[in-house]
View 1 (cartoon, one colour):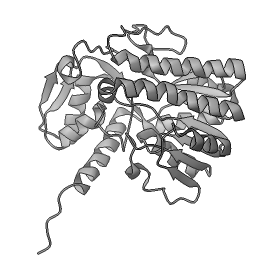
View 2 (tube, rainbow, N blue to C red; view 1 turned 60 degrees about the vertical axis):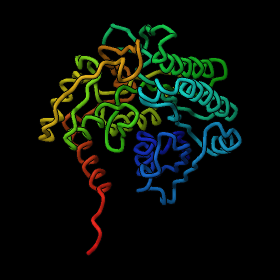
View 3 (cartoon, one colour; view 1 turned 120 degrees about the vertical axis):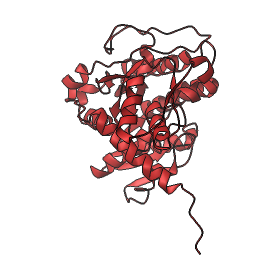
Amino acid sequence: MHILITGGAGFIGSHLTERLLSLDHHVVAIDDLSTGSVANIASFRSHPAYTFHADSIFNRHLMAELVDMADVVIHLAAAVGVKRIVEFPVQTIETNVAGSEIVLALASKKHKRVLITSTSEVYGKSTKLPFSETDDLVLGPTVNSRWGYACSKAIDEFLSLAYHRERHLPVTIVRLFNTVGPRQTGQYGMVLPTFVRQALTTQPITVYGTGEQSRCFGHVHDIVDGFVQILNCDRTIGQIFNLGNTTEISINGLARQIIDFTGSTSAITYTPYSEAYAPGFEDMNRRVPDISKAREYFGFNPTRSLDQIIADVVDYTRTSLHNHQPQSSPV
């Protein structure tokens, strides 16, 4: 197939591209490089079945051409990371809502298969665990910009399903839980790569809040498996699926596990949310996916443990730190 990936130079987009190329698909990627990186695509940029456009999905003329040539559109382009979402709320909402509208409208004109990437953030403050796809969404007040991101992704979902019901667009929605692995940067608030970098450089490991909040971390390769399985299953059209790992760990536990794995002497320090982000910032205490629907429809089965995830991120970060060390001048 010819597959268009928006946000294709990002963390997940680059891993998905590698997998699709290995399966002999043709991939065209577009990314404005606001959070993506050319370094992420360096290893396959010269592949004969790959084309990259350093441009924005808001270039509607270009997007119309790319959608027209594609068999499938995988829409990954979005604002990412809690830190970026809090600092740039206007860009977050506009990118998510208006960007998705462009993709859906263009795909609908040519009746192209679309995968829309959503997030576990849409479950908000719900305490019904694990989260399943038909659960109520419980969001906080509009005065807290954190919930603007969740709301914008929920609007993406409503719009996607509206296109499916009214205009018969073959669309599938995936709600991603915490996805981690090589190439992910801690620059925008991603906790696991941040902790690993701090441990390897013996900086204090900075935990926001009490650290008793818990998350489930899924390896990016398992998540990419889910995307490929969805593409191969027509039953997924018009459906929403959670993709993630179900093994839960507290942020304190994650910090200790990374310290033990790396043999670091880093201390764990605590920063209130109000200092890390903004006054009144809210976080979810737990975020656990119910993946039984994905397992039933296409056999989704994440196999990589948290130990393996940490090992892969540590290896990648060590190499990155080594490559960025200043080199001594030749004598």
